[in-house]
Length: 256
Image 1: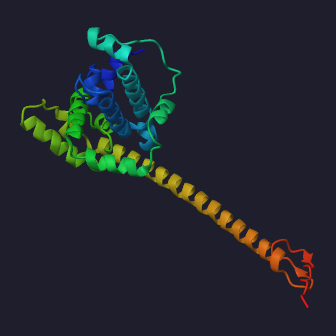
Image 2: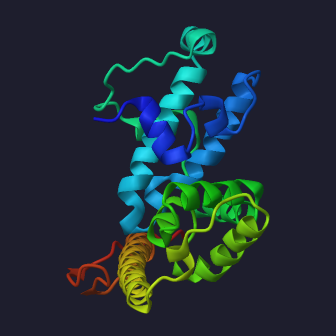
């Protein structure tokens, strides 16, 4: 089983907790919390494609533990002084509940805003570089590790990596630029299938919501009519609009 440090290296390319969050070692609790929130939104398991959920969940757990260490005065001091991390097993700890206890409920607008700020940012370039080097040019791995990337992102990622190679930042892995058409096709087909599944789930959820709203509106209308019948019903027998039973509303007393 991988140690916590190994998991940091695997998912974020470094064992330095501050480097993972992108903050200085002198960062305040507020700065650490803000960095944790921003990074966790990028890998939040509820907002990634099905094929990435397993990886996103593990990265989410690692981020949660990093925050729990750096926001605890004693644990942070121990880490700062000797670089030690409590490796005690926390496999049963619910990091999602931990996250929700700290931050407001996530919504789609949060994700959309972060996606806009992430695409083309220094953070994205760093993530692409780490994934490219770590996977030795494996495009499948790059798309899996870089937030918000998919098959439509490939041309842009190829261009970014080519520039990094030309600038001498990374070495060139031939398979990255010479990937077989069959492998590209398989990846694209898988992406399109997952996209269709996601869209069908979204449509189903929308239909259920519309049906629920329809029932709520109908109930509200029925309650309104019932109140009108009870209060203003006439003096002749007739069928109730709401129940279908015959009613004989009370006669109103007339003042002489």
